[in-house]
Amino acid sequence: MAIKPFSGITPTLADTAFVDPSAILYGDITLYDDASIWPLVAARGDVNQITIGARSNVQDGSVLHVTRRSDSNPDGYPLIIGEDVTVGHKAMLHGCIIRNRVLVGMGAIVLDGAVIEDDVILGAGSLVPPGKTLQSGYLYVGSPAKQARPLNDKELAFLAVSAANYVKLKNEYLGQA
Ligand SMILES: CC(C)(COP(=O)(O)OP(=O)(O)OC[C@H]1O[C@@H](n2cnc3c(N)ncnc32)[C@H](O)[C@@H]1OP(=O)(O)O)[C@@H](O)C(=O)NCCC(=O)NCCS
Image (tube, rainbow, N blue to C red):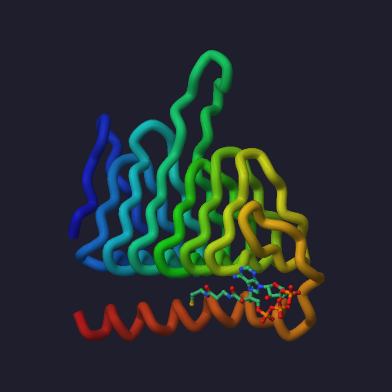
């Protein structure tokens, strides 16, 4: 498995986390319980930290990176992913904060300093500009991403179900290992 140290820090994985052997993880990355990283994900916690919360999944071909600290931006931009988050195939997450029960559609791009609050769906192929906050409870689509409509009860319930489905799936993959 390509779990590699950078600058003396090696990624920390919960015992129940899953990382596909074709993914590559460098440096200051923490994966909490039941988090899963799927084929060909590239994640570099080299110039700041990456955190992936419990039961969250990062699907195939996604790229995760961060921005270094500087005089003008003392914290830099870490990448923080909360709990029960689904990150679709080939998403690009850079130095942003994604809170809990969010679905990041496949091919979406989220830039430095953006915040996606709890219970949001970001449509496939959308782009969230630097520093923008997406409000809890809404669907956002487009480039730049705009609020499309409130999520209905079925969609809100689906967010946790999507994460749970991926926990089940990674357990099946681990069972085959
Ligand atoms: C966002 C999504 C959930 C919307 O589904 P939906 O219920 O059919 O959406 P709506 O019909 O309410 O669409 C609202 C508007 O946004 C548009 N829209 C929907 N998805 C869009 C997208 N990804 N990008 C741009 N516009 C989109 C619709 O055409 C509609 O526009 P209109 O009002 O001008 O007709 C779905 O299109 C999507 O992108 N899902 C992501 C799935 C995914 O990536 N999963 C992760 C991998 S498993």
